[in-house]
Length: 152
Image 1 (cartoon, rainbow, N blue to C red):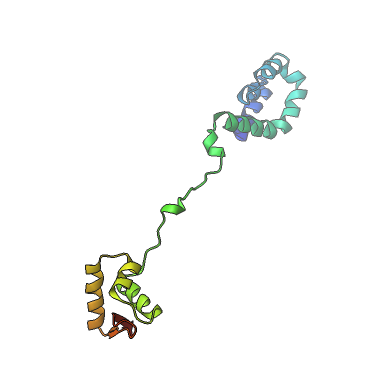
Image 2 (image 1 turned 135 degrees about the vertical axis):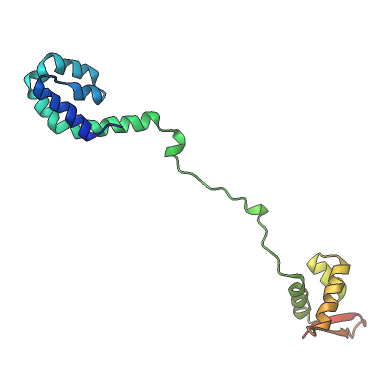
């Protein structure tokens, strides 16, 4: 990357008769040779360059960035997240069973197994725990006499 200070320092050598060195530094070798052979076009070109150096430095730096930067650095990165594999954490089994029993105003053991998609042994032990904790009450359905569990 070109630097304004270095370019001005090289331009300053024109006061000693060495003109055009700053143009070599800024990537303009042909005009640098012309400046060197003609003493900066008899000093007029050197005075003009005094005001053009910042623009020439910016041009050189831009060219360097475009030539040597990778294509990945200029493109915007995107984040892809596969939503289909994202699963929301299901509530604990005891909460699921309590909601089923509350929403259905009494549910059988098979209703709880189907709704939670857990094995009957696991669901049965959890239902027994909830009954012991007095969160569920055991009863019978009037229509068919099936054992149902109701949330308290």
